[in-house]
Image (cartoon, rainbow, N blue to C red; front, side, top):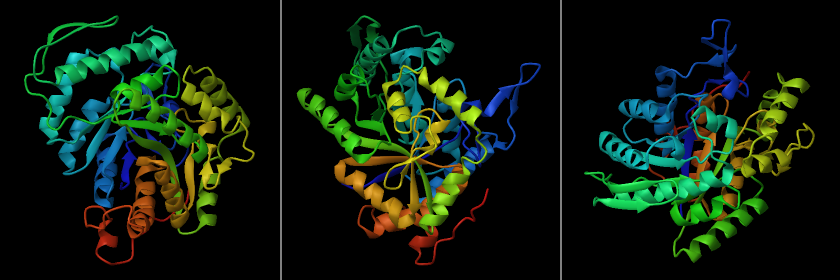
Length: 391
């Protein structure tokens, strides 16, 4: 089992600090304005990141979903015109679109991009965010709806008229005239009791946020046992940030600088907002640091500082290139196959990881040593070009 490496597209804005969904604020006349120091997620900048990810050897890029970022479907199909091999892990919310329409969209996407679509199903753990989309179901009901949604999607992809009669969807003769080829792999995450059975029945890849290895092992065992009862095999992935440098000291200095501009009030406000989330995974992230800046290295080279102000994935691999590779190898030994990574800023950090860590992983036999899986500078035998650090 080799490692599949993916990067992230910051369609809500990027920068040299821990930016998130609050990167864009409303001014006095209600129009969005860019927060200071934030790079706008325009197509030119996102294309730079996508091209860098492709050149450096990443297989795909994850694009988020929500009211705080650009639409993932439209953005990535545009970026597909700027790239050749890169796949797009498109996050979407199953409750805000018809499952038959979603199946059709995926099929069209595969034909336009020649098979470069992966799907990240986001059931949603924040009721306030869901209500912005007009969705008023509770947490467990949303997972029950996702279960039905994915049943319909896979049924419609069969190429034959498909009927379904459930609590949330009634489909008569659902059909995608030309099913996607290949079928997009479905990535799915969720730490609650309601999420596990849905993952076991439908996920190709179960995606967890970056918890310490012992906790990740427990999740893998849980989902694997549920999938076995369904007669299925599920693969596993992990979502992490990365701060990789030529030395451990340089990496930790960079990580600590990300917190320099965050005062106590900012952290407290973020923790209060995140604490209201219904997501079990989000609560597990918060428990890793408890809102405190003390002892943020919660496991060797695993840093919980990002989660002080950012929702969702809140941990980062921090260390020298070899140390980061060590941690990836450790997770891989547990059964993790897909690593979805990111960093601030995403363009520069892609180069730090791609030119620093990827050659180490390849030398250990975790990646195929080919010109398409290594940075071009490293694959040609020369020394990797390293992007300068700094604020």
